[in-house]
Length: 209
Image (cartoon, rainbow, N blue to C red):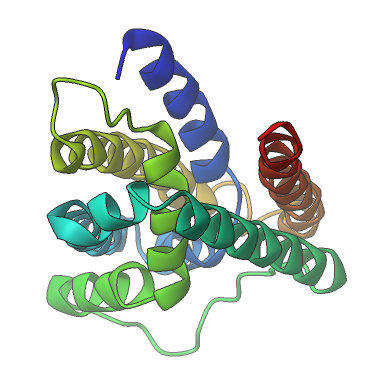
């Protein structure tokens, strides 16, 4: 693992974190209801991704990284998921709606955030498909440490983006509902492009192997 690898991963991570999805919808909902709910909501998402990072770095990620075929299969699975999600967003762009009831309690927001990110098998699949690609088995750093660092980088990128989204939701999306629809369309296109990019990169590797 070197600086170039980290910069490439950071760039991809930022693009992914800036792509609207279930996490965005959740923090937007929190922001629309109450600015005080944004921090615990994002903290819950943070804990979920931290749990996934620990799971992957704790052994599953190292096992996958040592099996090129498994990495290829998971990459295609992750690409297919991104494309499917992108198409879904193009068909049904997310429109956050404010509930009639007001939810209170930081613990509730944290628990819901953890469930959305940490208990999502698709998120685990995505981490398994993405993180091992940026590890170097020949590095002096253990695979689990490399995956842990990459997972923390992505988690912190997500936290930064989600905080901005949550705090900006009340002043932007609540007064301009059409903006959320446009954002959904842009998100769908970006997800499809990322999915095609992941798949085509692996196809090229297979053709040259």
